[in-house]
Image (cartoon, rainbow, N blue to C red):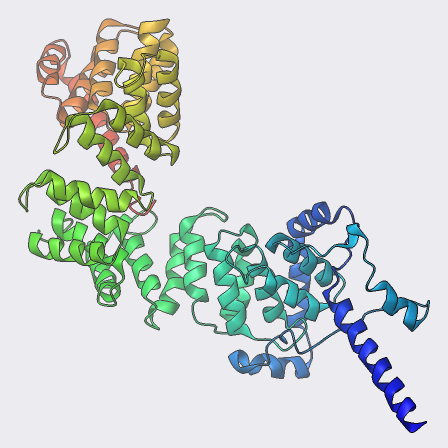
Length: 529
């Protein structure tokens, strides 16, 4: 009898183990519209998150003690830490066990995608089943294919201590992954400000970037410098680089090449390739009060290029392409341009188009040139759009097509290309004579330094084409064109000046001085854009 009892216990134990093991493998049931729900939940998180941040900041001493532990606080449990018990059916153990071995075709287990894990994690999060939410979200980023939106939510769980203790360093690491993935949810400065208030290293850099980039909040270089400096003082390489960039551009703060070089050197000695490239560019051009130093420029470009930096490869290729401080070598230039183009760097793709267009070191091939220009144009590279437009207008490597040319000119003009605006003006002038639009485009191009647009505006005012005849304005625009290097305008300046009184000439000179000053003030190098 004892043998039979022992055997029955063994059998029941076996089936019980099989029941729980099998249940853990069954797919979790989700509502039919779970995808739409998840997208909506993902989109309206902001207010809820801010309330949670507020609750967390107002908690009592127990949680404050946890926050004080900072990076050493207990992390969210792993998969083994918490296992929720599956619900049992009420129809009896043996019937349940038997049903495990009779699966309908609809119940066939299907391997989940990262998106499935992500949606499942959001559903668990909404149900406040944080341990299961964490496991599902982590599964969404575990394989080769990742659902990058999960980074933010994992960071949030570490940040707020959902399902475990607060771990601010872990929160920062996952938030940073979300930032690098371009997740719009992480562009909220209040999230980073909370971490910065708790002295988490690196958050000053991110806040500085948010204010510098100006893509999701209004650009503010003064605030950017304040935040960046906090991490620069802790030898944060990227923070040093962006401080240098702000001083180099001088967009909202006073331009200072000396400060730019100082901070670039700090980042450069840490082998930060972007800093080496910009520092090399300053030495190559001798910008500001920094003297030209070709040898140092070559060294810096070479270091960054060897590190695989696409900008370094591009600038080093440019040296070989131009051949002013190194021996001209189109083959070497082509190799370096190709390395950067393989990283989808639009300026290098443009110059590969130039090589094939001009036949420099290769057989001239308009079709190959057009292909490279189009690759760069897709990335909103205005000079490449301009080239594509010209190829369609002139029929180089493609059938002549003025409508297609107009479309590319318009796209380049919207990106601020003065050349494209001038070409559009000339096409409109030749097509239907819409003079008001022609004048507007010429003025936009001329205001952005296009000397042929400036010269043509002078002619329009001189002859009263589309505008009221005005010798003084004609003289001013001819003078501006001459200032920008159009020597052809000199005879027109002389001709107009002979028709003006000394008082008009003084009035025109004052206007010219003000225009040049304001025009130069508004210009920004925007090197990193």
